[in-house]
Image (cartoon, rainbow, N blue to C red; front, top):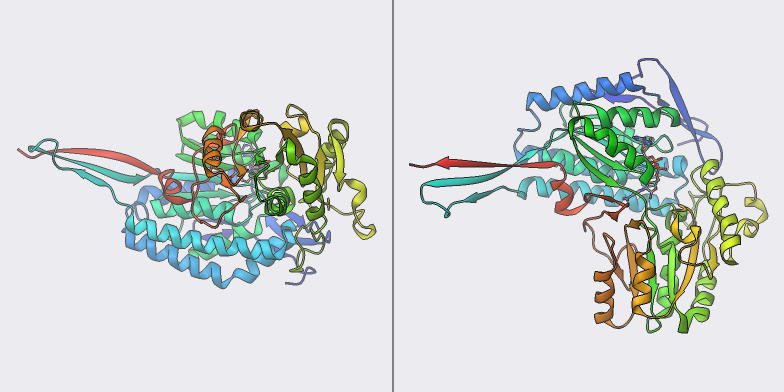
Length: 490
Ligand code: NAD
């Protein structure tokens, strides 16, 4: 794809591309080159209403919700194959629209393919149950049914997977869908809408509305408050998630919220320090720090504090900032000028609250000075109650905090309004498991961070990081209702 010819995308309503009713469009510029790389239909609440009406009709017709599980399995497998065929194009789109390095974008497409395959399998194998022996004169059944019309509102940092991990289980369950991606990277979602139809999904089962920044909240709020929508699966900031939750009260719809985080990566003195230091960098720099699970608080036991900071600092220098389409690049630009300014605001706060040992505004090479890049930026001696250690930065900025013993580490890790993820590094597996259990987060990594190599583990938060789970069988349950049936046999 040549950046001189931006891709164009329509809304996707009732099985076909459509302009917005006003005819309005918006553009996306590459955060790396500044060139226009995408032009999208700009939906308003009236377009969202049309999309919801199409999803409602498709649900009420019963064709998809009552289709055989074999049908849903086959369609989802065909989608997986089509996404795999389009892997280069989808990855390229992510690179251009979001500045995500190509190696990460390719990985995201691969996991998206596996996620469709996984939920195709679950569509076939997830069954209800029977109660046969409680009473000889009665038979009990537990039946699973799709929750209805699902509104899927997503963030920009995982532009494809962030929708796939909602859409695949929703469709496997038999729901119909209205998706609303972020204005910052709408292309992969819009392309997915077309692929779903190509794979044989009936008209109206998957609908998509794209919006610019101003209309994002309006359309998101329309979905959250609509009486015709039965479920909202939302990914975004905790502030927007609270607004979604309030609006969803209109019809007591089911809600799942994947929100912000400020996760603690805890390093004990007995850990493999070389390994822990390497991983501490990817834990907070993956996707340029723009990830909900980022290990953005590094807690280090005081005996090895100085030594470990030195190791982390050396590893930070190995990051390669540059053209996101170059496979050698490990960190691309931040998503937008607004995001860069927000992150730089936290660097100023860090200068007040800690000591800078690596990175910062002035560490960029000359050719990247006016860009949206920020190198790994590490502040040490940050107090655990400081703003830098409490607020989500969503950029490559690390707060390093010293701790004395296990209880101290647990107390610091838990002194956060968030509860998404965390890591523990130690050779003592008993201690690792004590810490895992004591830290109040939805997921923990032991001697690893972000993944130890297992796909499909449920992902979601405690506390203000949200509720509900994505991935795994729990991800499917978010889109299912349980109905019990009692049959008198006499
Ligand atoms: P955001 O809250 O600004 O926007 C997310 C989505 O919600 C967008 O589609 C946006 O248009 C829409 N939206 C905005 N305001 C809304 C409102 N009032 N009502 C309904 N919809 C609204 O978030 P963002 O900047 O796109 O994403 C970054 C945030 O997402 C970070 O806080 C990050 O931690 C979080 N996130 C969480 C997870 C997770 O799994 N927990 C994953 C990715 C991102």
